[in-house]
Amino acid sequence: MISIEQIKAARALLDWTQDDLAAAAGLSKPSINTLERRISNPKSNTMKAIQKALEKAGVEFTEGPGVKLRSSVVKTSVFEGEDSLVRLTHDIFDTLNGTDKELMIAGIAEHKYKYLGGERVLKEIEKRVKHGIKTKLLSCEGDTNFIEPAHHYRWLPKKFFPQVPYYIYDNKYALLLWGPPKKVVIIENDEIASSHRDQFLALWEGAKVPVID
Image (cartoon, rainbow, N blue to C red; front, side):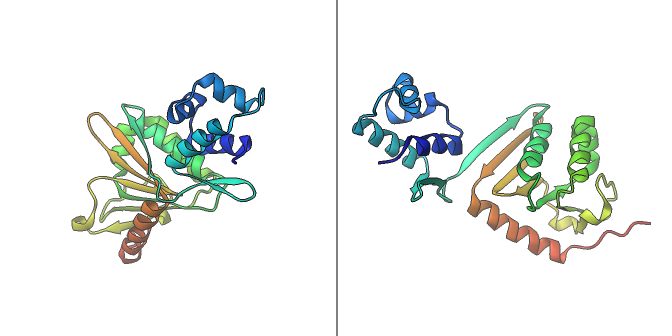
């Protein structure tokens, strides 16, 4: 039987509230609250219902005891509106800061960031650079509107330049739609992120180092 610690950890992995777990398991929120606070001994049927709901959502219970998400699980988030780009830059920083993992962005058009992103986005980018987060940026050949250090950039020929910017960081793959309205779609999945990372690196290897007059 799974433990209460595993249930709490599984909820955290899924970013579920007690209400979310109760709804998925067909239980009431008070029953989940009582269980996690150890006010009473849980019934075996209750624990089985919780385990089934969490496993259906993509949680694997491991020996130790531990929990993890199956790599095949796909979690999506959508930011929409004027602050969507700011929220994306926040998520990138929060995800990568303090790690040795790298941010990769293709379809960079920095003049749009300056115009549509505003000072808030520029400050977030400055913070990311200041904290030494490793970054690779693919922009269109001839574009010298650099916000970050020039060595972060490489040029793609116009025919290979993606019109929809995409971001790869940790296990996340994000798309930026300029709109209106501006929208960011984040897909969180190991396999998807890894696949796009391999494609990005292939483009990066064939891309040109920018020539600056």
